[in-house]
Image (tube, rainbow, N blue to C red; front, side):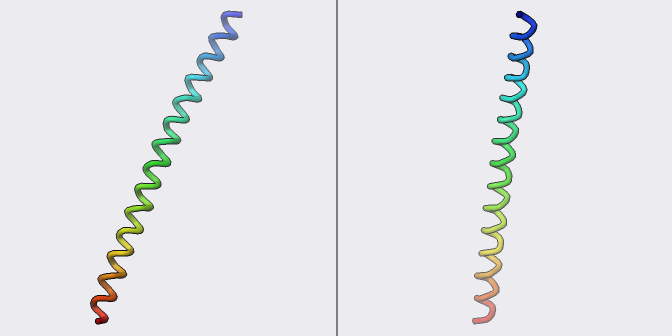
Length: 52
């Protein structure tokens, strides 16, 4: 019984770590997307200013 409980705790720990990694990954991707949008908006406004 103890071994089963121990392996359950281990898998739970791994799951928590993966969840943490996933959250970090999502945050990084969101940040990258936001940066990319900001950059392209800046380029667009810069390009439209040059046309004027």
